[in-house]
Amino acid sequence: MIGGRFRAVVGADAHVAELPSVLSPAANSAKGMVTEFLEWFGDLGMFFWQVARAAVTPPFEFGELFKQLDEVGSKSLLLVALAGAATGIVLSLQARYSLTRFGAKSLLPAALVFSIIRETGPIITGLVVSGRVGAGIGAELASMKVTEQIDAIEASAVNPYRLLAATRILACILMLPLLTLAADFCGLFMGWVAQALVEPVSLHQFVNAGFKGAHFNDLLAPTLKTSVFGLIIGLIACFQGMRTQGGAAGVGRAATSSVVLSSLFVILADVVLVKLTLIFFP
Image (tube, rainbow, N blue to C red; front, side, top):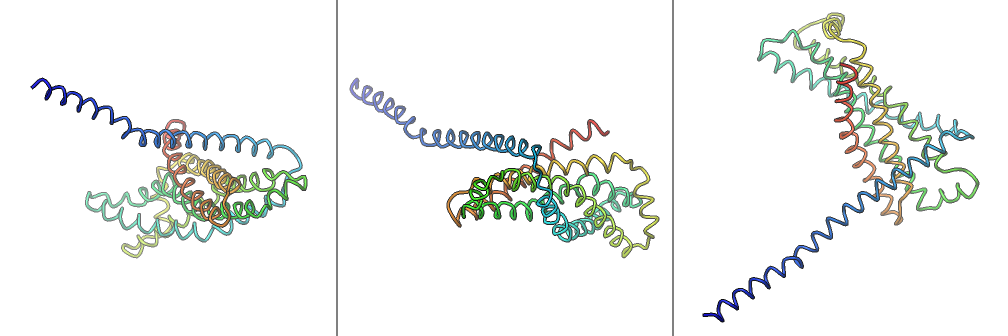
């Protein structure tokens, strides 16, 4: 009997002793992921400092900046306008259905205006641009990295952070608010079209009813916050592209990670910026 108890105790202790060996791979994996995540943030911060320092020191690359303004702005305009128009139609149809159920159909223009200019327009623009521009910048700089073009630029006494990164980031910062205004306009216009097809109303009446209780801050703050979206998109795309390794496979990974990370951080930044907007622009 005593021997049986002894074997039971020894077996239990052996089982407990085996737990660390079972849990250690998972713990090591989690620790490695956290370490890698912190290292990535540290590298991103160092990259941002190098770009910021290069951007404010002459000579300035105005020619490349104007080229990137065209790449980011005019070539994204059609896609952003279509996304804004589709959003306006969907919001108009859905809001009309919901407001009619509660007997508040007259509030449809105001609900559409506030929902588009305060939140839907900026976030839709940020996500659309992060998909198109983020992938383009990431793939372009990654291909230049793996083919050693960036090394050649640096060997020719040209700062690649100033020529390649700073110009693209600044273009994203400047173009995102303008693209947001285009998305807002298309969304409101197509929202009016969807409303007019169901119940005839003039554009003048729709605009007056929609902007009756609106203020300039309702448009200014949400539009300017997209500059932060542009900073995030340009910074992450340039960072992922210029640190690429592994040939053609690395180019694909850089393009994919640029889109995924920039979209994710745009959404997370929007959470913080919405709260700050409500505090400073009530």
